[in-house]
Length: 196
Image (tube, rainbow, N blue to C red; front, side, top):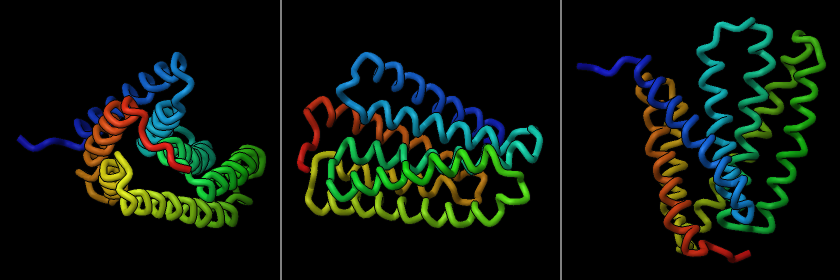
């Protein structure tokens, strides 16, 4: 029997919510490891995006909330990667991303909807630049054969496919989540990468 879109959504939303909440709860008791908190926040931001895409809220409200949720995923993903594989130049890029995401959220909350359209494409370009920097770090640490780098690169591949316009594409978020949980548990418990 084929799997329907509603069943796929239920599985993906359940995995994102369970992973996000459990990791944030774990981070509350183990604050010395920010990777868990960052990945938990990233999963909840993805959850927000998935919910908004199927929401029956007022279209004007969705126009404001959807870009904010989308923009929030980028610095959270960068913070997660930076926590696992610290790089000085990438740390600066992560700070730069937070510096434009926060004002962006304020602008979306304050300005009328008709004035938002020129702003959103500009911020999307900044977000793509930040994502390319994240992929560059993943490739760099894989070339350096850092422990856990293969899992990170594989996970990012599944994450990218999860946004393709195909009804089964969201299922690729599941191996993404599993691969990163394995990375967090197996490699971080071994002290993980520490090279600057």
